Length: 419
Ligand SMILES: [Zn+2]
Ligand SMILES: [Zn+2]
Image (tube, rainbow, N blue to C red; front, side, top):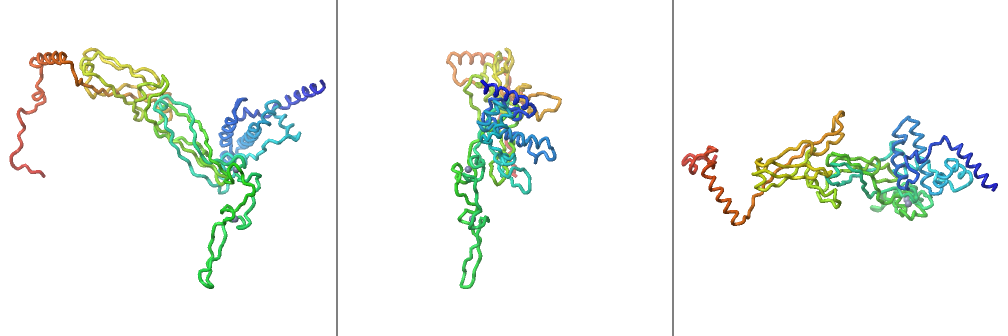
């Protein structure tokens, strides 16, 4: 009974003191049920945003950078997270004092370098930068039209999190006693009696690394890096151009020796393929795109093209219907292109003038007319007699109408010089 009272009292005290420090979840923009992946993702985004190298002289950003690292350290460890969830900041403080296993307790810059490689800085003294990485991601035309949030996964080199990029299981890394840490040795070679040459060779004890490790990290086998898949969010905005480049800062291959370069995604259009789901089974799947315009080929029968009285419902990329049609007596010549305004691609917001919130290109419909190549005998007879009846009365002599001379065209007999 007494102990319950004490706990209640303790909780009351904790509740009072906790006011003030910013909530770790809020700080990382997370909900209480955030997964380990969510926490890592939030850290990746925010630590880059607030890194002091990117915000020189801004002490608020610096404080945020430190706070984000602390929040990450607490929430990524299941034990400290549980304590934090129950007792808040003071629970964590008690936990540290009470000799509980301390949270990872990273220096914020060390933590940063675990995620992005290098020494934790972007452009400190001579900080090297790793190569950029370029990948192609293909999405269907439908996604360029409607916009979509999706994900893609790339395999990349990442700093080994088991050994934090040291390559050593116990974190002990010794300087190579053969080369003294230089990674190379000078070897004297005798060319002739009395004539020597000094050659520099790679140290074979340490493989040129200058360092040796007694207990090699079992995860990365001492390589300090591992290959692992990483998933990124991809937001396709309506009307984005094909081939547009989307940059993910510092998300390329990582290494303890450099700061990761950028991951650059080229957004491509995949070949048209009817979707599996009902709403994806649209005619628009087979639209072709050129810039902001779309192109569609509609087939008409001879009767439709000539006599009119037809209708078509073309299902657009978002499922809405575009109606095509002609009344009786309206002729469509083969090859005619009908331009339907505002039924093309949405125009990407980056290419819109500020005062316009949305606009669309045009849909170009090309009409192809197909003649019947087989006819019922009786039908052929009927048509033939109709043509014969009207040919004499109303027929137009095309040669005369076009001003073409009658009879075969005569070629000049002489003086026809090929040059
Ligand atoms: Zn060596
Ligand atoms: Zn390792």
